[in-house]
Image (tube, rainbow, N blue to C red; front, side, top):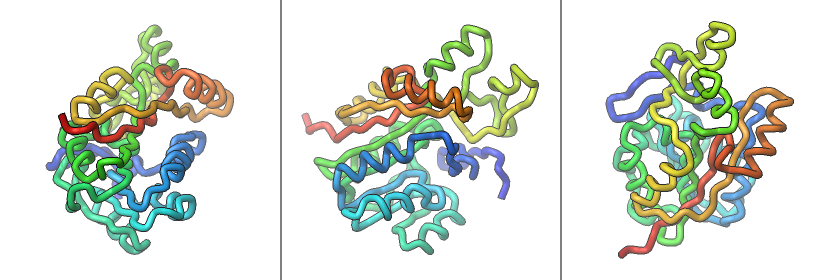
Length: 246
């Protein structure tokens, strides 16, 4: 399977490399702990890949009776189904094949930055959530502390991509070595991300920062800043709930 990012006809850009996890990244353990504490009975993972996060939850969140996933790649959907998950092929911004108010938690990890129509995605997330349900969404931060330094130096920041073949970020500026893109279409900072969620009917409950930099010494610094100042974090974990109808 090619690792090149591709644009799909139903509004998603991505590549299999998006399913991999940076070994220094603390995002998924943080999300699993948060979701387990919510004690949900059902969860939908948007952009679930081959079920990596569902695998984690199956062992850490015993209250969950139904683990479901939406994934564009049909090979990955078959893998999820072989593990016993309620998996369906489809785009993150399409209509989901589930009834309204079906899930206690909807998880969208590193997905919204790949989607052409994030409003459609968030409307569907809200539709399938129960009234007291929780959306857990993660995404990189354009204005991370290290990106602010890079931009002051005239270097393209992390997470920004320039083509679906290769991209020219910090590694290119330093070593003239292009990076493999994963299909990022738009990168958020905290203010527009919160505004987008609120516009689509969500109330923000909590914002946490997660670390990303895959270098041992820098990762410790990144984690300290990300935990203490979420607006400067490498990425965000945002929890939100459906706002009451007006």
